[in-house]
Image (cartoon, rainbow, N blue to C red; front, top):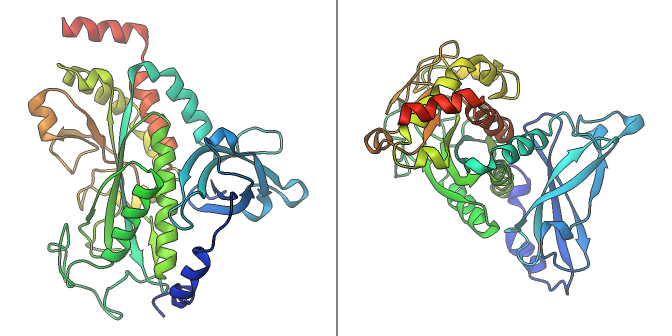
Length: 375
């Protein structure tokens, strides 16, 4: 079966129960990243009243031995609420609560990259770093085959699917549109969506977000995507190269700017940032997917609109480069750069933290040199 059994349950019957009044009480669904660094877990509790902010939501705990985050003999992990969203599934006043995970000693769990990212963002907050991330994903049936593809073959070659329209070009648009509305309802800064180059592959964009907000919004957008797909009985895969052969992979292109790059003459700051990134290419590759570059090795081949894993490159309007300077930015001499290396399954906290560290935590003499270059 290409769709899950659960998706075949009566949604009309379900709607009756969801419409029942719940008094003043609030359902709070806690969401966190598990030990894989990719998958999300969640569980729900009742609060006596609707929280006004995330600080009103209590800490909780879970069994870390069941999420590959602790041993059974010392399994309790702490859930620390960090960002609150509206719940588009059970509706107001209910909430979705993104959480950091702490170990028994209250130190960050191994896959809690938010903790370190937040420290970096606090150091550079005076530069107002903005991020936008373009999340590509692939819809799969329950059999692991791309949704809508012929069961014993392949669709036509790539070409008509990117931003395509029509039953023979767009596979799964209902899911995409429902996810978009769910994100808007939740308060996620989703700014767009489109069909991608490979059939059954789609993309949504989140941003601009400043600092730590980028990771918070993208992780919750991923949670909503998985929940919407659950209702439809299909799977959203973030595999960077879900299909071998002459098919595009899936990335999470990351746009980055600062107050300086967005100002007149900002191209000098963009060029300096690219110089910095060029010296840390392999370090960034190691944090741009959860397996230290092994996932991106399947994707960053220099083909299918990717750069080479081994070699750093950049260029204006070049989608085969590590870093792309958008054509409009090249003309305006200010704006942002696009890092095309992060994989679809990257941790946005690890990616944005690495970019901020490399590009913004500059030595004093480098800042002085840059100022001289502008005068």
